[in-house]
Amino acid sequence: MKDEGFGLYVHWPFCLSKCPYCDFNSHVADRVDQARWRRALLTELAHYAADTSGRTLTSVFFGGGTPSLMEPETTAAILEAAGRHWRLAPDLEVTLEANPGAVDRAKFEGFAQAGVNRVSLGVQALDDAALAFLGRRHDRGEALAALEAAQSLFARTSIDLIYARPGQAPEEWRQELRRALEILAGHGHLSLYQLTVEQGTKFYLDWHRGDWRLPEEDDAVALWQVTREETARAGLPAYEVSNHARPGEECRHNLVYWRGGDYVGVGPGAHGRLTLAGVPHATRQHRAPEIWLKRVEEAGHAATDREPLDPDQRAEELLLMGLRLTEGIDKARFARLAGRPLADCIDAAALAGLAEEGLVTDTPSHLRATEAGMLVLNGVIAALVPA
Image 1 (tube, rainbow, N blue to C red):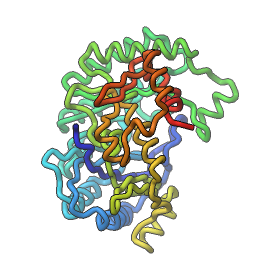
Image 2: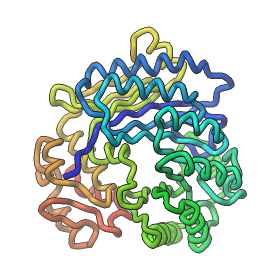
Image 3: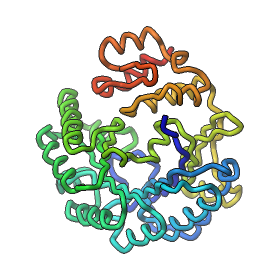
Image 4: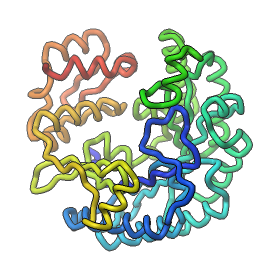
């Protein structure tokens, strides 16, 4: 059984512009007082470290927003503080999300010197027309230049792509994905997301007006199948619903989430999961950047929630997250983290039916969704959780 790890998530909420599909906690700001934000992040980090001393940190993830807009000095200060607060795993993974239009080689060098060893690059498409539709500030050439710089400076790189765009045919996606896999060369991670329309975004208004349509269900399934085929052919099979990697190149930080591990979340809107006195707790910080900043400066943190999870909540969360993984749910880990066996938390009749339909496989050690089950994962989970 692989250890679920212990992670740190740091949220940088600022972007140069708001992408029309994005419903994340991101904000456009003309000016950011970097020194003030650095102090506040370090203050909130110390607040949570006081409750988790003695643990071994296995991963750090700078997410956003656009963390590559941070000064590398801020990254360095946070990593130095993390080394004071916790023991650091010898193979500590430190990921920074970056956008091609918000970073250059000199800044990448600064992040590498600060201790970042993995970059996740928000390329999103390798076609200029698609990038314009997605509201990205960079073009294909800038994306390729940023990827080349990242690959030369960091041991590990990943790129994000969005597919199932309006009018996108499976064979068009196959060719675009093949180009991406060729560009990645020896680097081993891809995050591939089907375009979704989220309420509160510009795309939701455009879609609601009928400006464009998403692919029909059959086409979306065909696009999914192309994704699985091409990544497997290139040696980067899916290890999670939307994530693909060469063996050993999986994002360790995200595995902390999906395996039910503890993680500290700092910064506006950041979530965390902490086991305190043997009880799992959910934490959340205030979403609004200026309110977050003011509360941290006044109180040392900006937590709006720090609630214990009841046994049913914990079990459902472990089920929902674990079935996203190709490895599925490790039953021994589930029992340890949930405090009861998996069999006590799911509908036995529904499980038998799903297995008969070929949507899940159930062994003495693991419960997994099959390829067919991954396509209807929300329905599988809904069926397994007793009403």
